[in-house]
Image (cartoon, rainbow, N blue to C red; front, side, top):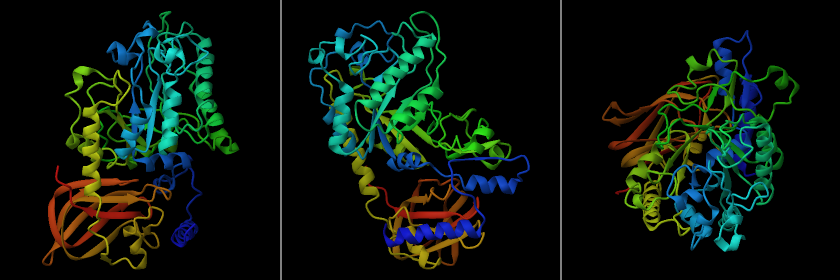
Length: 502
């Protein structure tokens, strides 16, 4: 551990002792006698579990929707498809993963099984799989190839497994949960490290006309046992769906939200220290974690948002959509509205019938990445003088683990930056150190013109990352005023940037 990180850790410990803050966990109980002040303090000290922090720091992840639907030209198959239809002519998982990595994506998720029940790995649970297809004479394994490509290129590997199975004859009976556990066990034990397991909430009828009661808690326990570092997403305890498939997150995005199904007895005994339940309640509204929302909660939990969208109108490949791939400019707008709003972007990039990412998708990914890289290549605030003492260097050192915070119990602050020369910028970047907590509730960025301070932009939550665009401003002195915070605000990074030309 380097010197700066040791200093930051020491500061954290001293601050916690000085301000009477509680030990960090990714959940907290609200007691009947807690005042509003107590609840706000508790919310300020809820922090991500290590797997949640790793996931948040990925920023960009990818979906590969690929399967029998790719060959039937459907979005949702019905489970009656003939496996002989699955026959990619040039499947190249390394091309998929490299395309994602070159776009700045840090982790990919393969649709190992969609609602049609067709499995992209040779499974002992069903004949509805690649083993019954002509691809590689039934000896192929798409999941294995994607996992291998992820290891080869050094990015994370995840699996999507649909709980809904329109092919399995046991769907709708108690036996299906055993069937699903067997499938999960295969996927979690054959392919090395799994970084994310992704469940959606689809729950329709099976071949017998019945719906299934999913045993999610049993599945969560299995994942924690076999792949303890894996993030369980969407219908899971670690990550929630943002509430739309548009790629756009909330302007105000709290990662700490109410959880009224925390078991008081189990927490008291320590048996629920590693949460394996999904918080109850609607997690798709406009306001999830404001003071008004948390003040009447029974418990609070760190439950961050994943923002998903497809690069095409559909989730699976369709040739008719080759000219409808999202433009680099649209992808950039989505980036600012997902990663830039305290979320992680999950971008779907569907391989085509050949088994490769289509040329149009590739071209737009490359151009998108170029725009991001050029915009954020130079922080125009680098080298600025500040009014916040020696620790002010931490907001400009490009080291997330170091940070600046207020002294005593200040929940507001004014940070002035002398840019040492006139600079033109139109993007603000802010990052809180979420290992301390998510705290900032409201801020304003201003620039000095003569003796007058003028508003550039305002915002609410920051969280892991906040990006705000505005009309270009030319100034030599700016200030960030933190107007409201839950306990002491902590700022890891401050940046001013000029957007690259399209």
